[in-house]
Image 1 (cartoon, helix red, strand yellow):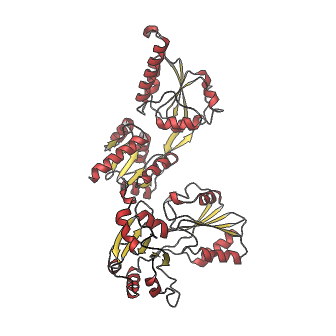
Image 2: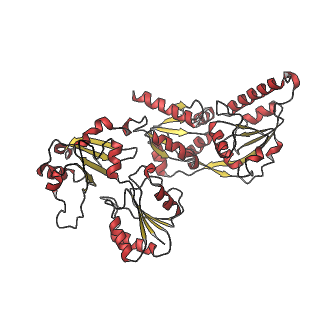
Image 3: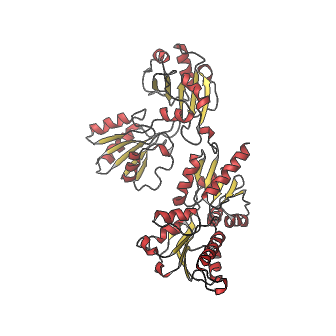
Length: 497
């Protein structure tokens, strides 16, 4: 088999390449560094081996990493050596490739987006510019300490007619600045230091060569840019203009459903804490023949997905009126080839009851059916839902004369939260609750919510929060993930004003 030296990119999971994702998902073994994008190893089936290094912290000797690469690479399995950024740009990928070649082990290199390009871009600093910088030099700010003397030609770097990009040079900033000035670089030349580049916590410090060494509070990992292009940040900064930049949002819904919501929040600039207090698991049930019903009501996206594990395909719903409790459920049905006939404006059981009544009234008008006929609009109804669902819809349909069967396709169960997840949620600016069960199980897991603003998706969730002693600060309207985000955005804008 082959060892793949894979670049994981600078930190934003969205910058991971398609090829890297394919290899991560199919690998038997992954040897990974500390600075890889958060979440990209969640759910992978490979054996995970941590081989990271941390400046001033725990260190795995490079010799031991090399030994592990040869050991796993000789075992007939697919091995991914996963590195932050690009493996051949200050990633020691060249050294590891030589070790593999000497051991006779096949390898491939999968480039990644390097931080020296990505972090400046996210900070609004182009490393080259037609008028300001016709070249760019990538330089290590942390040379091999075992070398007897520096391999860097500081006078040549100072004279370089373009942008200098320093990796891993936070502690060496005073020395870097003084060497460049001594070599002839202008003391007032702009310098930009980008911390946590491409991540929601990104911070950019703009200074000059003469002053950057005395700036306090700059922390690794960071990229330092020296050159006139650094001053363009004041005009081109874009990440910090996102509406949720600098805000931390905790999401408590099941991990399988949280990813899409988390991605939308990150796209708006938020730092997202995934603290899933619940998960769903399918129940072993027999679904009746759906073709024997006039109406099928589906009350969640998970219910839609689970339902189609019991059906052949969309043909089983031919001739059946299909109602979805909201847009998210309608989208899940559409993914299976079904366009819901009825979708309420309010994504709650009460809203679906209103939509069903309106649909029935419109149908009666078209048929010229007397209002006093007493016949229910839907004779037989099947409700596909979770085991713990509310009975509002079922009771309303039975009151209207319908014969209602209920099939519980899945159940919501608590997901244990570790201390780190609880602490991160408690320290967030906002905590989002997308169901009553997420609130209930978050409380049962020992979550504390004295500091964050609490955002509820709808009345039932708000009632559950109040019953737990937590007053929601915001309630979505409409009661959908879109409404949840809209409420959060409105509050963030107001609080920033």
